[in-house]
Image (cartoon, rainbow, N blue to C red; front, side, top):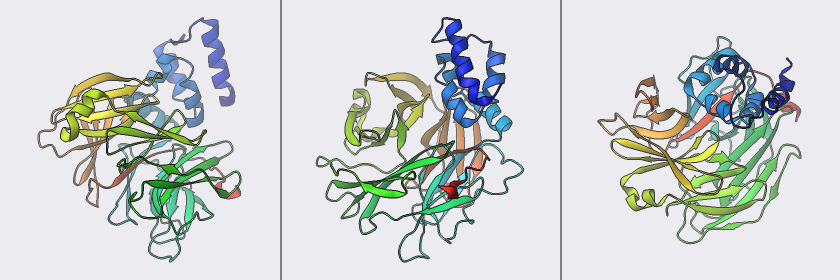
Length: 367
């Protein structure tokens, strides 16, 4: 079966079975099919039925899929004190054809990762070796790269986000900037770069209500919007298609707890979700299609020294966590850990950039 026809064939199978919510195939057959498809096709297969969506977000499937299709899945840890220092970590060994995930192939000594996409692309900015910053987009697994025009560099960058599609490759970058650093005037200048046109364009400014500030951390892209936590218990959401914004109040139970618990936006089976972390427990809240938060699960965690920072949801049952000198993948079901030591100490301000990539050339420099 040609992979380009997999999604259509599976959809027809489900229709013939008169089921829109459950898989007509056995678990073995489903695993055999789904672990053999590409990243792009997997995203489409998740829309076929609820069982496949659940299955393909679990850790045992992810491990099988990465091994079978030679997919690299992990995180770049961007050191915010030493902006030129970024470390890649993964619970899985790299394929034999990949010796390193460093960015030394870029034509700058000090690349700073400012955004990542789920299609294996990074947006980087040159560091200390250039007086005027230069923007790059690259694919580390194939060492492809290209420069893109600079935005208005006289403004201070507050946030940069990126989304990409493949076949053919196309990426969109959104830059949030201000006249003064650290959101001092609450007005954000919005610029959008589209690789199809190879230029930046100005979108309408955003005036945040005082004293709302967007907190540090990577954005969560879900349902066409980028999401960040704010300092006043809201989620700031920027809709990429409509180019407008809104705020979403956090669950009342989380708001009442105030600063007693750690809060992290994550993604759960494609939906925007929230980690609320206490000393010995984690609550997982998921935002449904109607805009209401539902508490999906509460997990008692084994964190006796309270030195683990829960940063992301790697799969639906494994959390990505960091300690002072290591990255960890914490299984929420059986409390097992996979640990990877890091050379540079991890600080709370460091940014964790999710990364997923195949090893296929995307002919990035052609666009």
